[in-house]
Every structure is written in structure tokens, then in C-alpha cells.
Length: 448
Image 1: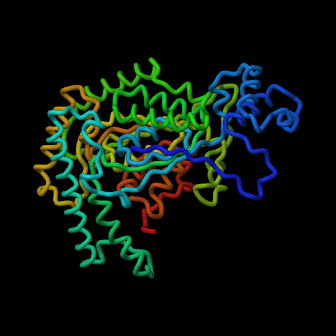
Image 2: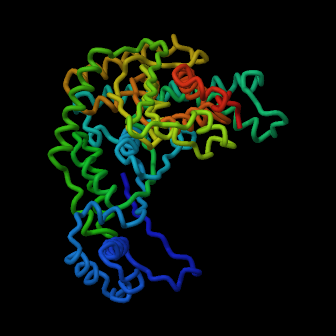
Image 3: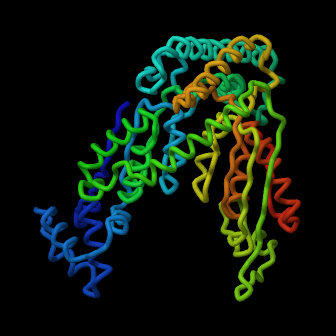
């Protein structure tokens, strides 16, 4: 695992602007909020040649807590190389206010050599040989199915939906994606990936504190590396980023709940689709919603258009009983609201194009390994899961954000399984909010 902090270099056109460190920026803006002198007068008192003294002088005057000041640092960028897909998922779950990207499964190395060691992941030593064997066989299944599906698509172009007048390069890309998108359910959740995030020092401190409070060795190692990197940029504010009892207590309770539910529901049989949606339009009696839903939606030219109060005030919770981890990794990145999953294997999804019977022994052995880790109460059970593992997933947000997600995940270029899940959720939403039907565009996941 490697962590790198990234600092912005001002363009030449900005040479006349004051160049400040993130902490100096935060302290200046904190002082600005306690003054009516104007920003220029405050900057005039700052010694840019000795920013630390200026920061300490301001912070000694301004009695704000570290969190309120940490939010003023601007975006601090950090890149994390070679972390497991599980850790990437967890960081996106924790860092709800970050902007970030993760390497696509289409571009990372699919090989047992691209796994952290069992020691790094906390896999019990006596189970390490079984874990390595299951992971290697999972990668072999991925490559075998991808090669077979790619050959089938090459021989039968009707298998792949193509845009009209698609150029040869587009045809090749979509053919390969056809195989990759169906074989990917064999990919281990422990596979190494990379991600980059940008967020303020305040949110980084909370993220690192949370990681440092988890029972997974990989998470605590990442917390240490991120902290060490950000101490170079924001030393005062990152001091508040160590494990803390409330975080540790909640992490322990969530792990216990996941272990119990995982033991109860562990299965390799695929789960039938089940979706749950609740739209809550309730408003205070002294501030009723008067805008019709149609007026909230009809002025948009596309999903990026601004919606009115009728949908922005409406709470929406939606959940699936069987979201495969392959889909969870992307749907988890929709940042608004709260997302929750016990991250278990309550079933295993494979598309109909996959030869299910050919992989029965692999999935049986993977299930047994997961069962043993669950029985031992090991947090490392997450690293025995493959991306086809189905877990319950809940997201609570507001109607405008839900509508955006539904249109995006059924729209141009959407993965076929995203489209199935979001179409089902959208149908349930429209039963409860029928006035939105004429103004929400459900896509057909046409290729792009």
C-alpha cells in the first residue's frame, strides 16, 4: 500500500495572488469570520515567510474548535495505491463529502499476484493456504469465462448491443466489455485497486479517525499512512485523527451484527430480486409544500437540471435484498444521504451467460472458507468474498438525488445489472409518486 499527498501548483496567471498553506488559509478565514476588517487587512498582517507563527497567532485568538477550522482548508488530495477493493469501498462509505475516483475493474490486474498478503489482511495463518487457493481459482474462473464470452461475442455479433454505425474500435471495446461485465462476479473483493480522494482537513481527520478505529489491519495501516502524509500539509488539524472510543464501539457493534447476519444467511444460491422503497412527503404544518411535483421536474433539460422544492424536500429510502458487491462498489459512491450494508453473502449472483455448473466446486469452497471466518468472528471474512456475493444495501436520501441516480444508472452506457436494480426501484417510487412519471426518464442502458 502506498499513500501520496498531492498539492496544487498555482498557474502563472495567479502569481499575484497570496500563496498560503491549507492551514494558513483555514486560520485566515477563521479570523475573517471574527472581523469586519476585510480579507485584505487580515492578509496584510500575515507573514508569508513565516506562516507557522501567523497560524499560531491567529488560532490563539480564534477559539473555534478544530473541526470548524479544519473545514476551511480547501481540498486536500490523496492518492492510495494498491489497497483492496474492500478498503476502497469502505473509504467511500466513510468519506461522504469527498470527491474521488477508483480504478475501474476493466483496467486493473486480474491475477493472484495482485492481492495483499494474508498477513496484511488479517487472514488467520492456518487459513491462509485455503484463502490463497480460493482466490487463485476465482481469478482463473474470471479469465476462463471472459475468454469464452469474448470468443462467443466475436463469432456472434448479435450478442452485443451496438450503437448505429459503430466504428470498429467501438465494436471491439463493447465486445470486450460484454465479457468483462459478466465475468467480473468472480473477482475477489481483496483484489488490489487504487483510488484518489479530495476533501478538507476536517473530513480527512474524521476519515482517518474512523479507519484507525476499525478492527481490520489494512484499515489501520492506511490510517497511519494517510495521517503521515497529511501531517506534511496540515499538521495541526490532523492531530485529531487517531482512533477514538465512540468510533471503535460502533465499528465493533456493526461487525458483530454482520457476523451474526452472515452466519444466518450465508448461501451460494442466487437470491431473487426484491426491492423496497419509501417516499416520505411529510412537511411541518406551519411550512407545507405547495409546489406540485410536476413543477419541480418539468423544467429540466436532462438529469443535471435543477429540481424544485417538491422533490428536494421529499425523503426517499430505497434498498435491495441482493445487491452484488460488483454493483455495490459503484452505487456506494453516490454520496448524498446515508448508505448501509452488513456486507455479507446472502446469495451469489452470476449472469445467465456464465456456465454456473462449471464453477460449483469453487463456489462451495469459497462458501466454506467464508463460513469458517464467520464462525471465528474474524473481520477478515470480507476478504473471502467475491464480487458476485449478494448483500442487502440501503440508501436514504432525497427524491431529487434518487431521481438523478435512477436516470444515470439506467441511462446511456449503464451496466446491465445496475439498470435492472434501478428500474425496479424507480417503478416502486413512481407507484408512490405517480405525478413524477411523465418527467422522469428511465433509460434502456444503451451502449455508448
